[in-house]
Length: 343
Image 1 (cartoon, rainbow, N blue to C red):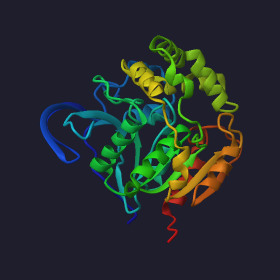
Image 2: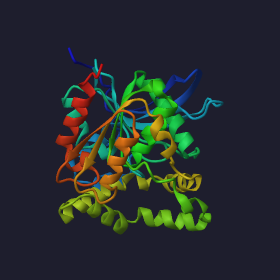
Image 3: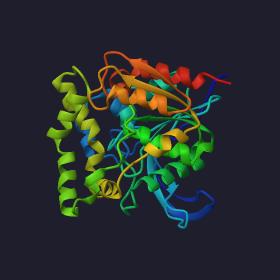
């Protein structure tokens, strides 16, 4: 049997006495365990109320499944970050799929593709990269590349526990490469979608005075800028869909710590993985879109040349985030690649 059903907890929020294991450390404490839903609408209590403005049925459905799990914050501390993700409901004989997201986004980016992967019998996790998404960052941790990498490793070590097929779109591809090079035992294969991996960090943005950086981040959150980015990202979508998808893409920005976390990431210098690319030893599938207006197709071709073991597949008639507007095509490519045993 390819996939076995896991039991799902009842949709509720509860406080309970738990003993949490964070890596090699154990600590007993009273924590709030937030399951699949706690409000009358079924959305988790930590999801911003602006979710009610969203009409996309796939976004609303996946949002109801977001949970927070305790993940170790540092090697020298027992404190944990309540980290947001969508957990699989099935256990597969194939190694699990772990889905990252692009810059300043969330696991809701996978709203259309995630159910197709599950339907195909894959054990899929959709996780929020530290500093973005819906994790509890009230006690603001560092949100630089090192912290993001360590956080993902502890989430993998505590919950995923098997070599994974790591999927990274856009900047998420840089997150995936950085992780795979530093923790090769955790990654069996990678799928990189319209990968943004040749930018050398945040550049001069890291040198901005804090007051200017906060002003820039406030602009990044603004609805008009996000709407423009959506219309650029998705070719030919209607204005009504563009408006709704803008609300989906900025939902996590309504959390009170989003601005601080984003400024911290920018000031840290961001991701610069150029020197790591040729160190990747895993098999890699590069998916690129025919009409990507954000990342040049020439960079995907360059990446295939730079990686020791990579193949490429093109999605026609599509732009920067094919897992949003061409989910069937992306799900098929990921499923086929996951099941293929090169050995």
